[in-house]
Every structure is written in structure tokens, then in C-alpha cells.
Length: 214
Image (cartoon, rainbow, N blue to C red; front, side, top):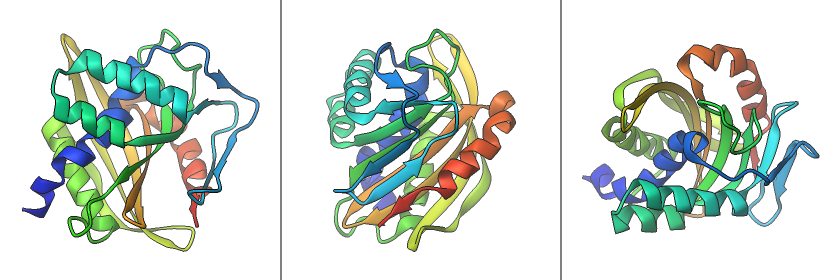
């Protein structure tokens, strides 16, 4: 029962993190000037892969909202996306480049209703319920397990799934890190096409190891 009730607000995270590198269309919000992101107010810091692009969260958020409006007419989903906050997105290619899929690391926050989710493993399990609902032929490569982001308790899992959008089907693989702080869920998703994932796996791991939540 608890995870059914959390489906709507976690749904937006799944939608943003997996679909977003495929459908975003902004062309001018990226630079390689700095690969480090820090948000002192939220107490988070992460260093992106060397040679990648860093994309500001507020501008990426606007593109995400536009893309969601084009994908669905359901107001509940649109509202859930508005509540999710993209802090930063690192991408292998410039944001909006005409590529089939842009490998990415996306850090997103979302308010978690008090009492619905007790810990990071609960958040991971709830996220997987939605992943299995949204994507085709989902396969969990690494089951949710305890993890540490700095000194903070977290959870980690890896999955593969097929994105279906019209006639397009694309198999992706994602390594997902989740943690809770003051009733806010933090989700870092490292995603690429399955056949290309191994090329970026080491970069994903290095970036994830630099992720800190104070």
C-alpha cells in the first residue's frame, strides 16, 4: 500500500531521468567551464565526468516541463514534474545535440510526504515499482542495496529497460543512487544506451563517488 501511494510523486523522477536526455531540445545552456557543481543551501556537491558538459538545473527544468507537456495530457504527471527540482545535469554531448541518446548524469530532488517513505531503501523500492510500470522489459541488474553518500545513508540499484515512444524503442541502462534528507529525496541517475554503457561506466562511478550530501 505504501508504494502505491507514492507512485505519483516518484513518477516524475523516473520520467525526467530516463526520457529527458532523449527529448530535451534546448541548444544553448551548456558549457565545459566547470565540471563541479555545489549547492550550499541544499548541502550537495558533485563533480561531473571530465570533458562532459554541465547544464544548469533551472534552464533544464524549463525544457523538461515543455517536453512533458508534449508527452502527456495528464495533469497529475505535469504537477509532479513541477514539484521535482533538477539541480544539475552532466551530459556527454552538448544539451540538445542531434544524437540518438545523450549519456547523462542527472541530480534531481523531490519532496517526500512524511510517513510514506521511511528510508532510502523504501525510496528505491518505490522507484522500481514505477520503473516497471513505465518501461518495457525491465531487468534489475543490481537489486537495491544500502550505500553511503559521504556519511549519509543511501541506496543504489542498477536496471535496464526499454523506452517506448511512438514507433521508437530504445534499450537503456541506468545506475541510480538515492538518499533522504529532511523529507527531500535526492536521486542521481547515470544513464546510457545499453550497448554504450560500458564505455561510460567508469566515468559514472567516479562521478557518483564524488557526490556528497551534507
